[in-house]
Image 1 (cartoon, rainbow, N blue to C red):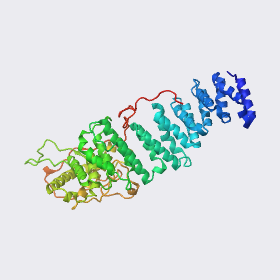
Image 2 (image 1 turned 180 degrees about the vertical axis):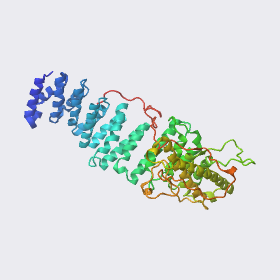
Image 3 (image 1 turned 30 degrees about the vertical axis):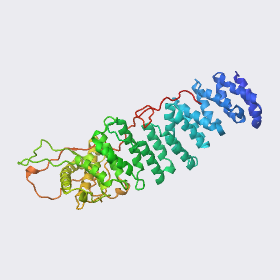
Image 4 (image 1 turned 90 degrees about the horizontal axis):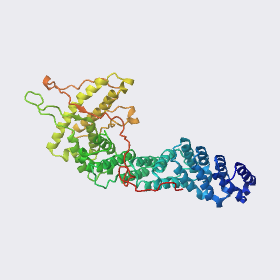
Amino acid sequence: MPTVEELYRNYGILADAKETAGQHKDAYQVILDGVKGGAKEKRLAAQFIPKFFKHFPELADSAINAQLDLCEDEDVSIRRQAIKELPQFATGDNLPRVADILTQLLQSDDSAEFNLVNNALLSIFKMDAKGTLGGLFSQILQGEDIVRERAIKFLSTKLKTLPEEVLTKEIEEFILTESKKVLEDVTGEEFVLFMKILSGLKSLQTVSGRQQLVELVAEQADLEQTFNPSDPDCVDRLLQCTRQAVPLFSKNVHSTRFVTYFCEHVLPNLSSLTTPVEGLDIQLEVLKLLAEMSSFCGDMEKLESNLKKLFDKLLEYMPLPPEEAENGENAGSEEPKLQFSYVECLLYSFHQLGRKLPDFLTAKLNTEKVKDFKIRLQYFARGLQVYIRQLRLALQGKTGEALKTEENKIKVVALKITNNINVLIKDLFHIPPSYKSTVTLSWKPVQKSDAGQKRAGEDTASDLPVKKAPAGPKRDARQIYNPPSGKYSSNLGNFSYEQRGGFRGGRGRGWGGRGNRSRGRIY
């Protein structure tokens, strides 16, 4: 084993030779042997081996293997030095191998070491993006779980930082091709990360690009399969996939396939849905997704049939008024509960799809059915008006910090929900029913175009005066309407819960296993 002095002497020989260093193979071999020495010799070897690497192509394998030994040394300072120099080995055909090695080194738990690996990967990315991606995807497909996980996270966080001259159209197409291979067998969390990676690619931000992504999600959701509402993983997968698809839909990228699936398979089984996520109102989350998608539904093959399913489900949450006894009091023991959050979603979805078949309520249903629906709407609207007045009173004069308390946040959302329902019910009371009004779903941010113009029926928290109720016929005091106890969601904000379990094929978590995979160093 060479000493420190011998290493310096042979370094001098190679440095003095400059471009003819390749003629001094023995001197380079002495430096390679430095990896077998003590800590000082190893530190020198970690710096000297890469410095003269390019002059000895016939010793490339030996040099890379020597450096790898140093990358796995027990001394953290030696490891860091060796990793820092790895990009110097990324020349020609060696680059994919170096990328593969660096990807495996992402499993390091030492933060400084981990950062060095990240920086090294980014530096070789700029030398040869495709070769680097080849190493990363190789480990994602075949590496250990921890390496796979960190390689995916590296792509999801670092790709967007690379300049356009690195992420060319050809490179983005390569990322899409390789990602499709990975998506054949992913967990829920991995799927979400890959959608983040792919949706960030410039070439996939076009209409045709978003359409490709929707097709990927639909394939992952497996919309051809029989829906099993009692299987939590089946339900969870559908929700996760749909949540990824929703931001991709637009007037040019239609949600028809998903909306059709929800109407035909999910709505009829709404009450049977199960979820692995504790405390989640799974029925409400499904209805919220359907409402968001309904705005971008294109031409539907079985529109009337699916609209009927939606209408029937809406009726379940639109109760008939309780029968009154002879003295004018309610004969029943209690008023039915009005589930405002559910009704907002269902009514909005019905309103959106109803535009495509405007004579549904007048020509497709019998007279008794329409009369029954109008009675339910009227009863709901009466309770709604009382509830809206109560909410406005509760929020009147409250601004700033006062509106940020949990109780008032819920009331503000409740006011949005009830106002939305009010606007939609008014539309359906028109003769013939109208589908012209526009509302922003209560959990969605108000669009910028709406900011300067408040639409009818929509109130903001800062605009909450008590409005006089519209004049109407006076009624006997006994008939003053007491609002039924309404139910609205206190689950504020957008739907987002941590993904649990894997997708088809799975990776041993939730939705099946990927089988046994190799362990240990596979450089």
